[in-house]
Image (cartoon, rainbow, N blue to C red; front, side, top):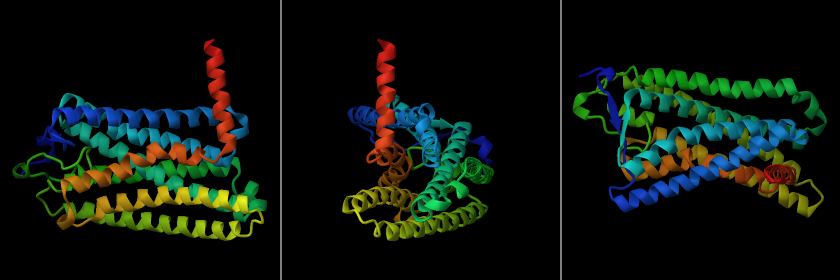
Length: 313
């Protein structure tokens, strides 16, 4: 048995061993990363620069874009580098940092999605109380609570995971393209890993509680939308809410499956697909989902792009 500090590096799982497919994976990841970078950066710039978007909804959207940028930047650049150079190693400290920032940003994002569901519920179901319940100070406090919850959750899980003794006999290979807690626990040769499993179960219960809150909020929203006299207005509201719910459901279901699945149903290919769905897809598609039917945001983005073009000229 050896202490985790005696392991200098971990070996990540490659998507493919064929050099041509490795390069194809690199270009695919690069395209996804640049799209996520561009989409989220445009939303951040538009909300920050346009005073018309200085409202609670866009304030939360700006925070969501920041978290999306951080989470996808924690995993994808390393995966791209590994595919490009064929080097799958990641240092012990680098793995710990990747786990900390990923859990921090993903946890904060989920808390923020819960806050955004509450914001939408108040805006649609209790519009007369919107200014009272969601003033600027309340919005800052809720956003800070989301970031703080993600930070404390990450601190707890990272500290506990990397304090576990690891077995030299089990090697240092992780069946994942980034450092993921369940994969690190597989290398532990001590029953102490049950403590981290217990923490994961507790976190999963909290996540499920937030998901129930989100679902109930949208149920109330749907009931209010059904009372809208305009058929076009109902269709627009339903399509927007359903897209949001689809992203949240994909995020929660795949993340929960990755963390709680029994070892008997685990396989490298399945783990890769599931982790890709909850770690890469949401940050990449969120800018599209939240701006597709939002005319105010489209106008602000167009104004921003025009300003950049004219400034260059």
